[in-house]
Image (cartoon, rainbow, N blue to C red; front, side, top):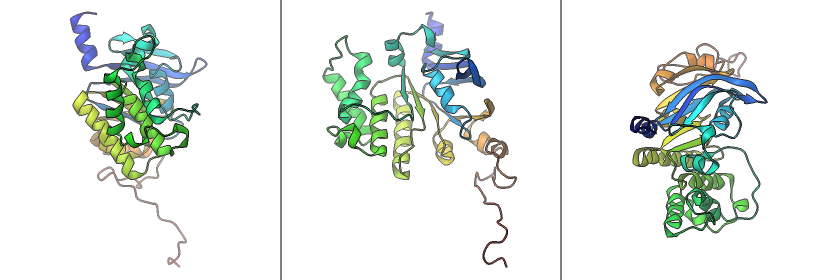
Length: 273
């Protein structure tokens, strides 16, 4: 890799070019182009079923691309071994798996295996990374608990800690605030902003909570009906009337100036008679 390409890969660790994503060779989302820079949060928003999770799974290499390419640290994703990919990209998806018995601490420690030898033995530096990641998300007190016996919100924080301690330049997150109450949603996004600022991590994620997306994101990509409808800064996106089109809102229910939602008048409400 040339010095110029290497520098570009460092500053823009993830490129998605003309990506067509879907299943069994049929594209559900077409022509997605985006770049995730070091120290930047890029967020996909859009209605349910718009294809956000399909895009993320394709970028993660969990399903093959129908067309286009994903370039990770200057190399096409398909050219990377599983270990190389795990050293560059940490993934947290919403799918619920039923793990065998393991403690929360052991679950987080699995994030260090891409950096260990063939036997997967953790050294002191690895154990320090595990503790630091769990403390960062407020989960250190869960380290000895069975992952199957914690709440959904606690489990989400443990899985985020696992992704963090992989120490990758890119984090890929699908609805990371799901199962969390508002306090822990805010805490989690504060952690992400710290990672972005202190480690210059690039984050690509999908969020349903629009106020949170507006607060945490540097760049937004609006996906609907298998295509990118609009992209831009939070002010550009949320200040656009395209939000009504994105979510099929009635005219006048979304205020692009304030970003507030107004409920439509309901005919026949009590007190109107």
